[in-house]
Amino acid sequence: MCSVKAVRCDSVMQLSGCHACREVIKLNTRRVKLSPLKFFLPIAALIASFSGATHAATDSDIDKLTTYAVMLGRAVGCGLSTGYETSQVGAWMDERFPPGSADQQLYLPIFMAGVQDNAQKQSQGLSPDSCGAVQEQFELVSWP
Image (cartoon, rainbow, N blue to C red):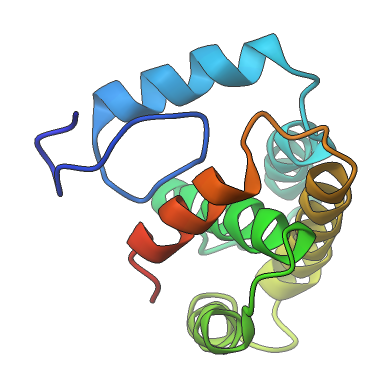
């Protein structure tokens, strides 16, 4: 258990801010085929650093973006209702990555691909978590 928010650590990404949970998540993620999202975000950061465009996204923004993509994708793959949470994330993204900005042009397609990839893997049974575990964790996420 993490002391921050007292949430259970498992392979579903959480916004608990708990370093121990992140380490457990990293270990569990290594045991399964990594999502392309895990590869795209570092590549996107590298591209952004050489593109000359100014990007305001912080490491925290990227962590949240990744968490939201994983959780929303897995929830969609389980058939959970995600309308409210999706609208909350959309509003947060518009605030953090303003429409038309270089950040939005870079991160929005990556986010959408992450949601799609996680939904597909969950629905095909390729996710490390059952839909019961996904639903439990989905309800614990601190949505924006």
